[in-house]
Length: 496
Image 1 (cartoon, one colour):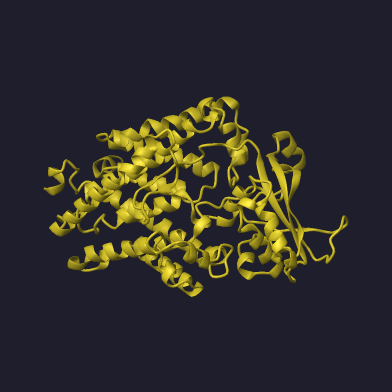
Image 2: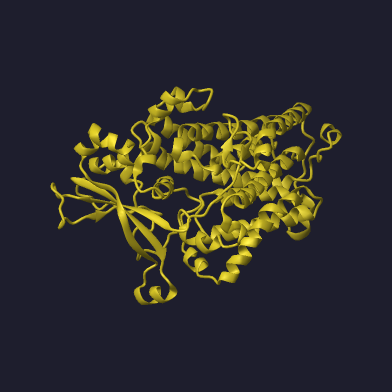
């Protein structure tokens, strides 16, 4: 009765949606913690590219709460990451349903709270390597999942609608930042460049890039419709809300097929499940909602309080969304409870890549043989087909995409440290590579060369078999040794 009196949808008609959202979210948590287990320590651990001490020294616990502020060690990172993997598996398998009825609800809430709190620790301590919109969105959705109840009690409709509110802000934020950003979104030409210049193309990106210009105009217009018009139907009566969810899933599915955007698209699809009522799903699928009981009054009161909290915290993100100075992917509270979202407000016209190479020559010269480091998601080798890696997140590869936009590493202070790791033969950084050209021991010198890449035309690919053509445009870092990188003079040259 409390929810109905507030004008919010009563529970009991979103049981299947809750099941889909929770299982999808558990799978993404599992993936996120696996990524943390493999990548966090070499990127942001005790001796990472952005050492954990830099987070502890520059932020207060209140500003960026994290377990690693209290326990700044690789051992704590490993325990939290693998602990998160274990908890994600329990959530994915529906473990709370096995707990006796009186304890199932608190057990479910505790499980989802621990997942949220552990991942919060990685996001707040991860710095630039965790500064993506889908990190905040995973935390925001993860927080709401705590209050979805257990399988034996009616799903709280208010929380389901808060999930739709996250979906709405995600889609509309992305649509508005495009219209306010790059002219090519307004003249419908952005997709002429997107597939070639996106952070990590996938095997179908080359084919999508070469679709007819008319198709690119239509898909750009369709992007605006799905991001700016369809989301208002999330709050419409059924079946219109469900149809809006289907349109969103189809749109995100196309992005999955043609790019590697970590779990951004998968998480958006999971959110879109919240637009389906049990009645709609039952009319098109051979599924039936499970029998549930009324949630206990303390839980209902808690749901109401959480709803009011989220609505209050939504004021600043909502004002940002409608502002002419809109900022995307921003958190307004240290716990990432309500955030702003958006992607590709501007589109790069040219693709630049940093190619890192090493040599065992103690005195490099014009005849020196340089060997190339290969990263899992980067198109370093023009003959290599773009890989499919999403929803796995290659964090170093993404940061290399951003770093390549500038002609020097001044705006990427972690990059010289990456070179030092290569010169030291660091095992952690080597684990992030697709190919280490120095298995026998580290090189004497390394360098970084900046190239402009473009897709081959169909005729060029038929003739050469290459996916890319590239042109050298300059030196990102001249040949350096470990002694060079450790000198004050070199550090000062980067800051100029």
